[in-house]
Image (cartoon, rainbow, N blue to C red):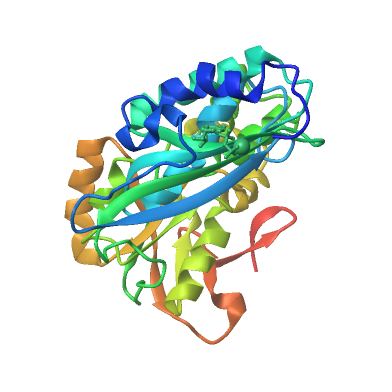
Length: 335
Ligand code: ADP
Ligand code: MG
């Protein structure tokens, strides 16, 4: 590390706050070595994903540090879930401005401890540096999947049903609420939505159960429409979704009732960290049982169709009567 932090030295930070998070993972050597060793179970692949969050862009600098830590970990676990992987470990690169208080690091590590226990993962290494910019946190998560079975983006076929887990749009509307966009929203709904922005729920247990069921899968991080477009493009297909089927929380419905353009925010905003996947229609009953067992809402929102050759038609949104909608300044409006 270069530069000095107001907090204790880099080595004290590591031994005080991060080494305890490595306890229980033999190959992490209590963070006393240069690198960690991770051996996947026999017949398994390691699935690797990294995602960084930067203060002022992915979280608010005044957010509680424990929630910042948990969100930084969760965004990575959601990618593993979308790929069908069981999470095992993660690596943390932490870039801190020199005036960071020790209490910030302590609370950040406490948040990580909570989610580590909840999701069954361990910290196995990383790096700590100072920065001239805002706090930045890069986490790399490692998970396991049976050899060759990672759920790809590319298997969606015409006729497959498009599903999404959880509810969509809460985080984007929560950020809008925190920025003062919905001043008349009741505080219970406002708190619910902003909590979803700060601490998105992630369907970690569901992901591995989608192997054998899902034909294609993607994490909803850029926004429902954008991520469905990614999945369709990689699959060489197109999709039609029904706006009235997209699962919305009651808080999101309250916002949309008063601000119709907020439906557009919900469908195209990001940060949901849910799973968007396709499956053949005969999988519906199994998926319904699975969602009930794991208490993860799974909602069918549309279906895959053949690609027309027109990129503009890659993802179509229709209303309850099947009439095409377009994203206009009024929200989703009829053509
Ligand atoms: P190096 O000088 O090789 O970068 P460090 O002194 O930074 O090594 O790190 C010492 C040990 O602490 C290594 O095992 C490293 O993986 C671990 N480590 C450093 N920073 C972090 C962090 N933010 N989170 C987890 N482990 C860390
Ligand atoms: Mg280092």
